[in-house]
Image 1 (cartoon, helix red, strand yellow):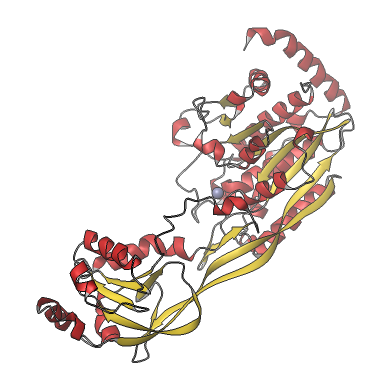
Image 2 (cartoon, rainbow, N blue to C red):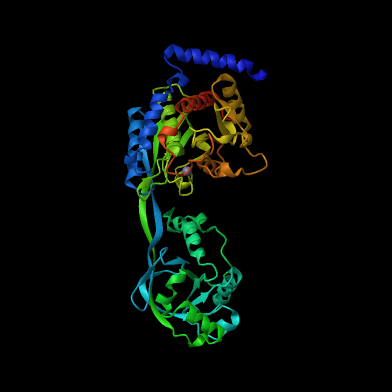
Amino acid sequence: MCKKSGAFVLFVFLFVLCLSAQGQTVSEKIDRKDLKQYVSKLASPALEGRRTGSEGKKAAAQYIAEQFERLGLETRLEEFSLIESYRGEAYLQTASGKRLRDYEEIMFQGSNYYHEEVEKEVVFGGHGRPEELEAIDLKGRIVLIFSVDHKTGIEAQSFLRKTEAEGIIVVPVDRPERFESERNRMKEYTLQHRFFIPDDPDAFAQPIALDTMRFLNSYTLRVNEIKELMGMSQKKLEQYIKAKKITEVPIVPVKIKFERVRKEIITANVIGLLPGKSEKMIVVSAHYDHLGKNGAHYYPGADDNASGVAGMLELAEAFAGRDDLPYTLLFLAFAAEEEGLVGSKWHVNHPDFKAENVFCNLNLDMISRVDTEHEAKENYIYCLGSDRFPPLHDVLLQADSLYDNCFIDYSLNNTEGISSLYSMTDSYNFVRKGVPALFFTSGLHPDYHKTTDTADKINYRLLESRVRQIGLVLELLQQKRDN
Ligand SMILES: [Zn+2]
C-alpha cells in the first residue's frame, strides 16, 4: 500500500462506512449473477452478433435502454445516420454468355464502378512487356496479360495507367495457385460492409496516390477460365507470344457490371443519465456493437464487448438511486465501434458535446478474459491512459491499494507517445477533445474477433472483481475535485 495515501484511506474508510449505513457499498452491489445475465443476453443468438445496421443490434440497443430505464436513469437513444457502403453485383460476362463471378472465377479490384452493365473489349497483351503493349490499340480496352513473375505484372499496371486502357486482367499463369491464396486472403476484407459518417473529413484523410496517375481497375482471372474468356487455350495464346504476333489474337467483346452500393442507415448510441450535484460529468462507456454473422455462424462477442456493457450496466445499477453524487454520471453504450470508433466519434463531434463539461471518461472494452501475460496472476485489469493524466493516476493507485481482489496493470501504457492500443479505443475520441480518459481491458486472447468469443468462456468471478475495482475508481473520482 502506498504510504502517502494513509489519510486518504481513512477518509475513504469512513466514507464507505457511511455508505454502508444506507445499505450496500458500490462494490457489494456489483454482482456476478447480474453480469452473467447481461453477457448471456447480449451474446445470445437472438442478437445475431450485434452488427451495425442489423436487427440484432437494434434489439441490443433496446435491451440496454430498458435496463437504464429500469434503473431510473434518464434514458435516450442518441440516433445518427451513417453511410453503409459495400460491393454489390460484380461480374464479367464472356462472349459466349458465361458470367465470371467476382471472387469465384475472377476477382475485381479498383474503384471505377459500372453500376449498369457496360460493353467492353478485351485485348490480349501477352506478358505485358512495354514492347508488347506499345504495339496494341489500348484505348478504352481491357488488357489481358499472362503474368510470368510478380514484377512484370506490376510494371504492366504502371505502364497501362499512363495510357487510355480501361483496365487490366492479370492471369497468374506462373503460379495458378495464386488465385486461390489471394482469394482467401482478400475475400472477406473486400466484401466487408463499411460504415462512415456522412461528410466526415477524416474519411478522406488517407494518402491519395499521385494525382497524375490514373486508377486502373485490375482483375485477376483463374487460369482455367482463359479459354472461356479469350476463345482459345492458354497454349495457343503462348504460341502467339512466342511468335511475337499477339496483335493477331482476336479482340473479344465482354459485358461488365461492377457495383458499389451506398445507402443511409440509422444507428444509435444509448444514453443513461444519473444527475449529480454538478452538471460536470463522468462518462462511463462501453461499445455494444460487434461483428454480426458469417454465413451460418454468428460472432457472439461475449468478451468483445458484452463484458464491458455488462460492467457498465452493473456500475449504473450500483450508483442508481444516489442523489448525493458530486458529478453527474453519464452511462454511454457506443454504436459502431467495430466500424472504426464511429459511435464515439459522432458523440464527441456533435455540437451538443461540451468537452469542458466532462471531467473524465472511463471506457470498458473486453474485460472478462485472461491474456497470456497473466495466466499465473489472473486477478488483474489493464488501465491505459493514466500516464497522461496524473490526477487520475493517483486515484487509480488509491483504488488499487484499497481493493485486494484485482490489481491494476499499467504495462500497456506508452509514455513515449501514442500507445497504439489506446489510440484504437473509444476513449481516444475523448482525448482528442482534451478530455482525460481511462481505458480498461483484460487484453487480447485467441478468441478475439472469432465466432468462438462465447459467453461460456467468460470468467465471471474475474469480471466481478474487475468491475468492483472500476466501481471503486468511480467512487473515488466522485470525491476528486476537478482542477
Ligand atoms: Zn472488437
